[in-house]
Length: 282
DNA sequence: TACCTTGTTGGAGC
DNA sequence: CGCTCCAACAAGGT
Image (cartoon, rainbow, N blue to C red):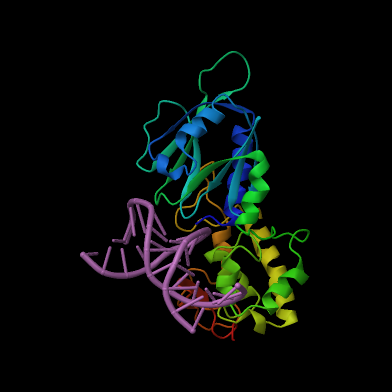
């Protein structure tokens, strides 16, 4: 379940591995996940060089020496890895991008970027470079969780006028981009806010703490290479370190590190939700 | 076998 | 109309 820290870690890895390489072939055994079509992708990107990889919220964005951008969302279990050619595809491999170093005469592929996804929930979309900002505006993706982008007064203004429960609201990606089910539980625990608190009932003090905690936890998790719970690995096949730092996610029945009360798991808006009933009261 | 997992969306319902 | 909530969906592991 890659959230912002995991997606950012994948981005950093892939940037080291494939920037400057030329796409010589694209194949897919599950073209349905390419929402804008496999043929279009092949037509526009074959023989193009990958010039950069960026990220917006949980979306990865591949850039080329062509006016197109490839937007990749990993959803639950999407993964990238690089392989030498001639390797047998694994069961859940869906897209194969053959890459050649963009130097010399060789069109001989050096390595293959493989996209694998057990659940097949991830998506690829090819869009014009000029349509990128429109794409995220239409999806109402909120600011990046950084001190520069994430404006506290705007955040407070939205919360003050909403009857939504805070956890599902934070998961919408509209208040701030990048939180998923793991980090939203961790953030609310650290800020001592009950996940079912009605947004407009949060105090100014709580909102301030929540704002700072979102930035802090996502930054910390990114620095640690994300959390490998379930099956997440980065593009080098390496696990993250943040799972060791989690306080409530997946800790049902264990003691709260603050007060020794047992961590509970409830359902909030259909999502498994971990919290300490003693530290996080409505 | 039915249920659970998650992010996102469309539409039901108030 | 505006807002909130929830089922549905993608597919397979347990």
